[in-house]
Amino acid sequence: MSRALAIVGIGAIIALLGGCAQSRSELDAYISDVKQRPGKPLPPLPKMQEFETFEYAADELRDPFARVAADRRDEPDASASGTGPRPNRDRRKEELEGFPLDSLDMVGTMGSESDIFGLVKDPTGVVHRIKPNAHLGQNDGRVLGVYEDRIELVELFPNGLGGWEERRSAIALDDE
Image (cartoon, rainbow, N blue to C red; front, side):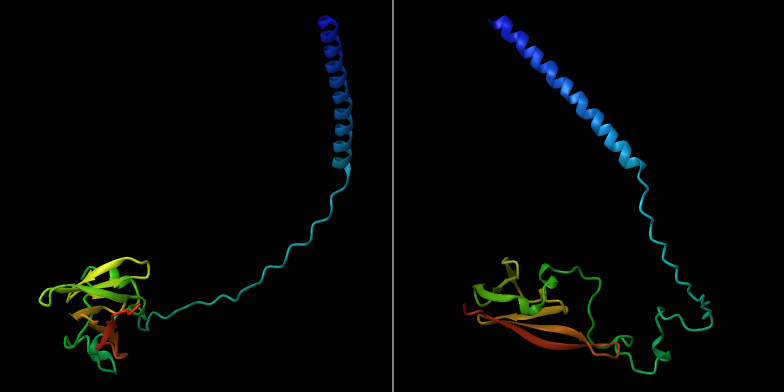
């Protein structure tokens, strides 16, 4: 009985493989028919726009990217005279200088009155300890003093004449 079942199974497999051979020939005929059809015409290429050439000859003019000496300017330059405040570009930036001042929140203080430091939370939720002379904010803000209800600082802003001016500001304790 099992031998007869095996012979019937082999016969069925041969019949199935024979059926695959017929469908393959039909598929090959369809592919060759599709390949013989003419293709659709391509749209014409767009015309390239012609640009008028322009020769820039400004060798005798001032280089717009070169620094100008203070005596050649018409307006006064407070930063060139060496007087007045200006940011220290050689100083390494502190972590809180990457955030705008209005995005920082004072959340408290720690320590005694002689050695007090403020707790400031940045927009990412990290709390930092702040002491006088620390820097924070994007305008070269320097902490003047830490008090129980506020942190006072001074920021540097350009005055429009090439110099800098100081403006005092504060971060108040957040009551939330």
